[in-house]
Length: 157
Image 1 (cartoon, rainbow, N blue to C red):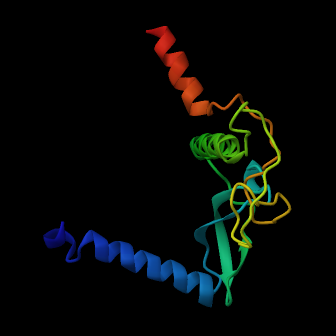
Image 2 (tube, rainbow, N blue to C red; image 1 turned 45 degrees about the horizontal axis):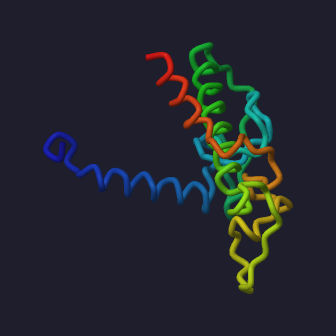
């Protein structure tokens, strides 16, 4: 690959990271770039998940999702598939991070003795605007949707 491109794949990745950071921090000068940002519901994608959208950026890290770009049926299908996967992953995390009483398996209030302000499953707050995980979501009996899918596949065999 190095002979064909004249650079290593690590160098290509480093360059892409640099260009992305440059657009984010210094602005894209009106160019439309793709960035993973919190969804505002654009293109029919659920709100409050991080999703890659066409954006323009301004100096200082400010961005605006570009609306009105026509998408093919293939692209719309791919976007919806990715959205579904992200929502399933978030639901799985909500189950994993939900505090439980270790003796009964039921949800119980927990406390922490540390003064840490770093979010943990015990002190995470659903009021944080950047928190994609809500500690008050309903439990699926402790199983992730991935585990349930594996069980279903095993029964079919």
